[in-house]
Image 1: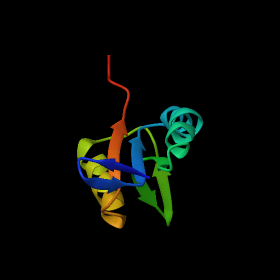
Image 2: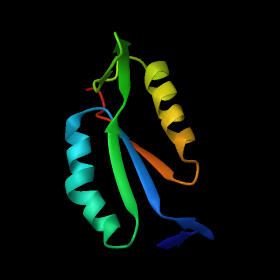
Image 3: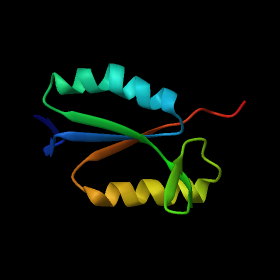
Image 4: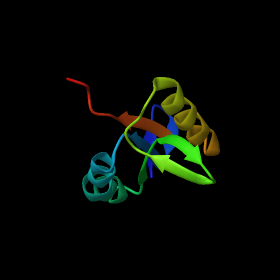
Length: 89
């Protein structure tokens, strides 16, 4: 467990655009934070919903990505959140 600015930190959420960023969190960041008692999890943003299925990755618009990230943050307000997206060239 860790303290950040007087606030107890035990969870980080990483929002990503694609599976590559999720893999980086799983293979690199999660073990690093886990050794310090902090849980790290990543997931790709939802880009569309059709017939009960949620499609993730490859964000199509800022508003769709923002809505999904905000909803995910609301599920656990005591966790920190960071984003990882490829920059367009």
